[in-house]
Structure formats: C-alpha cells, structure tokens
Length: 145
Image 1 (cartoon, rainbow, N blue to C red):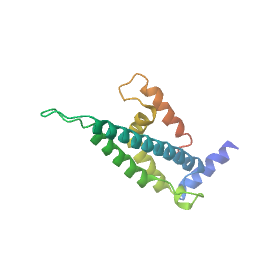
Image 2: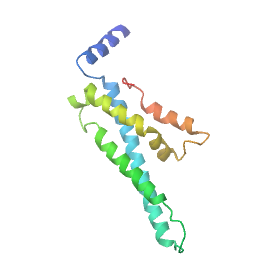
Image 3: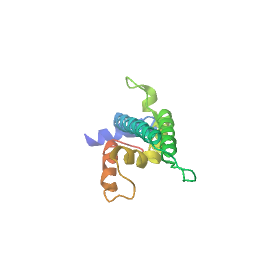
C-alpha cells in the first residue's frame, strides 16, 4: 500500500502538482507567520507608547528599535502576502508545484525571524534551536526542500 502512495505522489509531481500534505503544511506555516505579524504589531504599539513618554536629550543617539520593528513588519507582511495560499477550499492553485516551490523558498528565508518573534528568542539564545523545532514541526508533510 505504501508503494501506491509513493506512486500517487510521483504522479502528482509528474503533472506539476503537490500532495495535500504539502498544502496543509503551507497553511500551518502561514498561520504561524500571521501570529508573528500580530505580535510584531503589538510590539510596535508598545514601543511607540514608550517613546512618546520618553524625553530625548540633545546630542543623544536616537534609538532605532522602532524603525527596525517597522521594517521587520513590512518584510514579513509583504512576504506573507506573496506566499499566502488561497483561502477557503483547496483550489488548483494550492496544488501547483510552482506555487509550492515559491512558498517554501520564501518561508525558508523568513523562518528564523518568525521564530524569533513568536517564541521571544534571538538567534544567539541557547534554546533557539529548540524553538526552531516548533517551526520544523509545522512543516510536517512538506514535499519540496
């Protein structure tokens, strides 16, 4: 029976489609990305409130944290818009190999940033690799690497 599953998957690739498990993995990763964007928006709001209450002294070096957060938000939002799978029912577009390849290419580029935001760690933290396992678990069913 397992050989039939492999044959089915190979047949899908031959016609330029990916299996349902790949589409489900994309959707899980997209939800995780959307959570990161929401957390980032909250961080930006709290940073803006903190800066509005803070007095700047003449000659002091300005803090770029807010600008960095806004830039990260722009990057993640734009990338999320590019790779987001079709909403609702499973459509033909979700299954195409080309769309799936595009999704995973972009996801691999932003995955570490998304984990940093969602899990509250930095890449230099001791438990960063452990937190990356969370994102790796979302990719279960991924067929394109």
